[in-house]
Image (cartoon, rainbow, N blue to C red; front, side):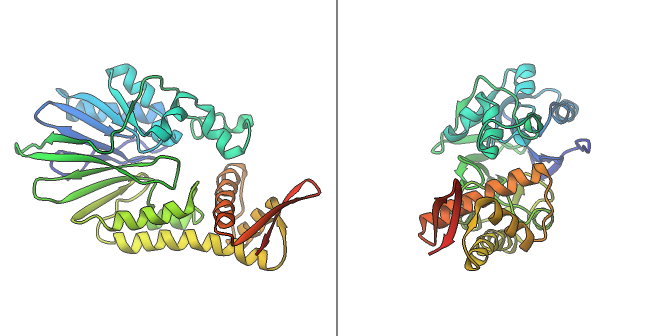
Length: 315
């Protein structure tokens, strides 16, 4: 795992600590407080991040961690940072129980109690017992370094997981920065993982449209990889194409005849030239099952049980 580097400043007082998971840092100069957006995958990354903050803001206190969602690679150091600082932890109602029961994430992916290969920091977030629900109607006012005020609001960005949250910063001049979590991926990430994990594909596409509709957005920060600045619309379009290409792969496979769930997963992977290990199989298969549910809801495909196997077919 690469070490957390020093912070990248987006606008005065608003930073990103790049890493396996990009961590947002919102500083309130008036109150000498810091809001973190996610904490990374592991406690080690969290400790590196903590050292960066102590070096750059020795007089500041961490007020709260805002989790974009409850996946383990975003919440890995929540418990550690909370123990060190006594900070609050914010997340949406749909994600809250996942942090309070670390087995839920791996069980959702596996479809039952998961095997031991998934009992690790990638699939199981650290247990967090004390959380606060995000109020999406609330505006938090942040003291900018020049004495003016920034506004921090929360946006519902569902689709990737159950209750994804975006954090929108509005500067005094109206310019905006969105910390988007996994609601959008940059081109490099799509190049590595064309079939992106999601539980609600249609909502993912709607969320991408919602992000593109934000006026005066100068930075969009995905949780992984390079930040998005001047090519937001093109990047969102590519993400949308990835969603619908997976859907089309399913429909193309079923045009040839009915398939079981496992055979369908194999065929979609073959169409996309994916050779999966167990970890990627877990993510891709869960995503394909989510697409299947969405397609069935639209009455584009049918499902039945034949000889103790779930069979899918075109309408």
